[in-house]
Image 1 (cartoon, rainbow over the protein chains, first blue to last red):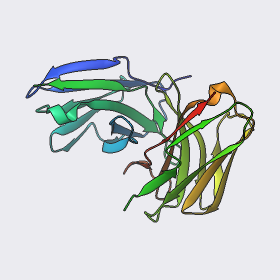
Image 2 (image 1 turned 180 degrees about the horizontal axis):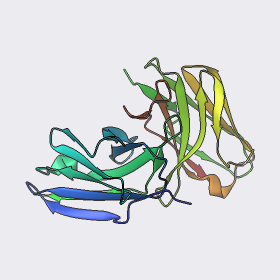
Image 3 (image 1 turned 90 degrees about the vertical axis):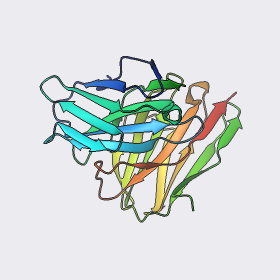
Image 4 (image 1 turned 30 degrees about the vertical axis):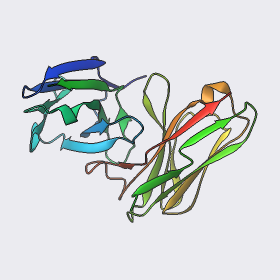
Length: 111
Length: 114
C-alpha cells in the first residue's frame, strides 16, 4: 500500500515560469514532509522539508506548502530554470520512522 | 569527498548467485538505510540500522541480510539471487533518525540479475 502518491508522472514548464509539483498522502500520523530531486544515475538529493506544525516553508526559489486537512503538499519552483529538470520525489514520515517516498514526477523545463 | 559511497556502482550476475553491496558514510551519522528502487521507480525502504542495531526490517525476503559492523558502514548481502531482485539499491544515512534535515543518499548500485 502506497502511503505517498504523486499522481503526475511528468510535467513540462517553460523557463521562467512557475513549476508546481503535487503530492498526496494517506497516513495522518506523518509529521515530516520532504522533497527530493534526482538526476539520472545519481542518488536523490534533499531539497526542502516542512514539519506538520507549519503550512509553508521557503528556501530561495523553492517553496513547499502543506495542507494537512487535505493531506496534500506541493512544491513551487519560481522561476523555473533548465537545470531544474530532474525527477522530484515527495517523501513523508512519522518521527523516528523511515521516509516513505512517492513514485516521482519528472520535470522538464524548456528554454 | 563522497559523503555516502556505495560499491559497486553496477553489478551484473546470474540467477542463484550470492552477492554483496557495501555502503560507507563519512558524515558522522548514526542511522543508515537501504532502499530499493524497482522498475516502476518506486523507492521502498528495506532496512534501517541505528548505532549498529537493526530498527527497521520491512517485508523483505530473508535472502536479503543487512550487516552493520559499525555506525559508518551498512552492507547488504543477497543470497540465491532471482530475476526480480534486479533494481537500483540506494544506501542513505541521517543523524538521530531525524528525517527533517533529509537523508543523504549514495549514488546507487544497479543490480541486474540474468
